[in-house]
Image (tube, rainbow, N blue to C red; front, side, top):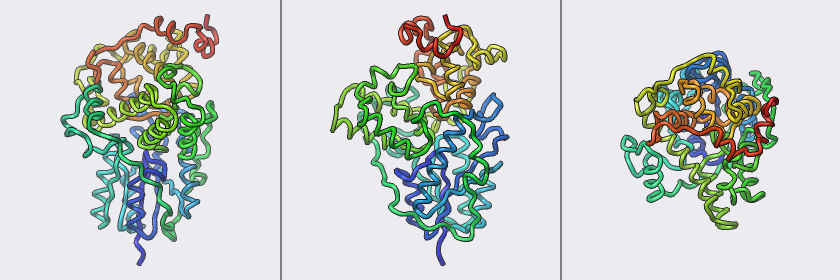
Length: 436
């Protein structure tokens, strides 16, 4: 009798550098590949902001996810496989139903720092025991695994600089794992539900950046483009504070957030570029940004639900409060602060905002508008194509003075920032029709 396996994709929408998928493939004769799609009308799911903001995700964010799933399905099809998509109100119930039907000897899922994702993995382990299945818990899409870290997770520094120093002193990122040379056949006599059959092709997001297409194929192409094809990596530190355009930053964050590419693959390419082209402050700085992503991932793993509380990981509630009118004006790009309004209109139109822009609009949100930072974080969750739960909520805590910043409230002088990063006001003029 042939053994069945199930692999549940989450934030690892790729075949390469996916150790959990590889392990499941090696332990079964037939394979069911699954992605669970939460109902759009539900709250507290990946489709809607988890806190203080109603409404479905932006069209741009949905489109990128759809494209990523399409690309994964195409790759699976080339291996004689398929991606089974399930629309569900309760992921745990759906996993239980699938396991009851398929009777797998092995199931697998990659770890993720998100609270909901952690809950699902814990439930999958319980279900595996109930169904007499082996459960493979894959490592997260991070540079390091938790057992690699030079400290116990409970003792992890809550400030980035000591975290970085400890990491750089003792660790090198893990090696990239090749994609499976072949995948096992599909589980037979199973009613596969495809991308088209459940209506996901109805996304109407507009593609504002021709290269920003979801999926592993586009992710690897962008990594190669930014490094070896246009050599933009060599000047990243000088250009990274740009506000508009494509080449001023790597733009890899959206693919990293969806797991279309892993940070280990980015690190490996940086190393290859340094050997073949140049090694300088800019090449290091891209790795430095990966370490920030790493830091927030392990902070969320350590602190869990405290990441979403008003007082943050410091458990020190600020004096700000929610005001619906001021919040709406901020969302609409109608605050009266030109650089902030331009950034917000860019976000609403494209689903993207530069790192510099995110700092400015968050600083304005907390300091000039005196608003509850959680509403700003939730709006980013709704809009950003590259939304990553750990980085998003960690950075908002940082700006609100309740997170990992040892200096407390970090306020930017918006006029000075405008003079530095948009001295000719070209960015403002592009996004504000009535700019002076």
